[in-house]
Structures are given as structure tokens and as C-alpha cells.
Length: 226
Image (cartoon, rainbow, N blue to C red):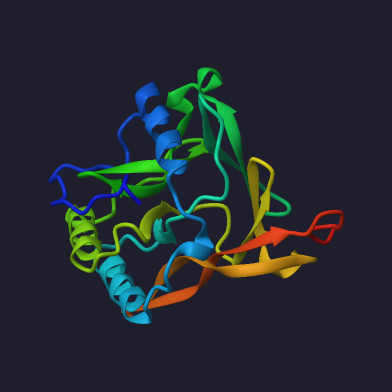
């Protein structure tokens, strides 16, 4: 994947910078170069466990997780993928939005991949950025050092958590995706685990069940219980 190149991480990488229009255009370009999740290799449990320890060490596990870098379709010119959270039931609806209709001040990065020597969001999220002030100052440098050292920069991305603490399934639609509680998903072909979140239990790091399981909705049938 040509867009993601292993280089030494820049020292001042940040997740909470204000987005500009050029950032949205870069997001679209990056998204269209991502492989399908089925084309990505399996992530070894050793790496998941090591990253769990790193997240807990830096107090990052409550707001950040990791995501298998992937896309599902090519998005049109001058658009970007933007997600919105809903409640009752908890779900996240992500769809393409016209860049000219977006106020960059009302959105933030949601899933980031290392592109060159900086983190680039390839999916965005409506609403304010969660409070990241309690995350250790050395977290990003340590995270990026680990994924580059282990040649994971094309495979593992960083995700700002939200929507639900439960295992979620991602249904792939036309130019959109829907994430909802896995327990209510019906009539879908499960693909693979694409996300992980971490937790500290009695001071020991643990990684939890999938944050997201990619699943393709079958045409003509209901996707979830109503």
C-alpha cells in the first residue's frame, strides 16, 4: 500500500489538531488506497498483547483502541467518510459526505493510519473530540515506534473509541457502513475481527473481544432485529 511508508515518526504528532479542508482531501485519497479487510494478514496475538500493555501503561485504553487498516469501496471525488453515533440502539452510521458541505470544526479524526511521517485520519467522526488529556505524553511516540519496528504500519491503525463498549459488527452497504451490537445482527456473512480495545484488570492489561467484526449484509433480507 504505497500511501503508508515506514519512516521515523515525527516527534510532535497529535490527534487533536484542528482539521483543515486539505486534511479532508488527504483523507479521501488515503481511504481509496486502503486494501479490503480480507486482504490484510492476521495480526499475531503477541502484538495485540504487547499493544495492550503499551496502552494501559500510558493510560490510553479508555479513549483509544487499534483498528485493522482497511477500506470497503472507492469513495467519490470531493467526498470523505464521516461517522455519526446514535443511541437506542447504540450504532454508528458512516457514509460519504461532500467535503464542501462539511465544517471541519464540527468533526474530528476517528481512525488514523501512518502516512509518511504523520498520522492521517481516513475516517472522520461528527462531534467533539473525546478528552485525551490523561493519555501519557509519550504514548504516540511509543505506539508508532512499535508498529514501525514490527512492520505493522500498513496493518494497524489507531482508533478513537466511541459508540459502545460491546462487541460491534460492521455492515457494509453501498457507500456507507453501519456498526451495531453484534448480538442483534442477523443474516450477514461474517468476515473477520477488525478492531480491539483494551482494559486494565487489577493493574494487568487485557485485550477484549472485537471492537468491530466486519460483516457483509446479504441483499434483500433484514440486517438486524427490530
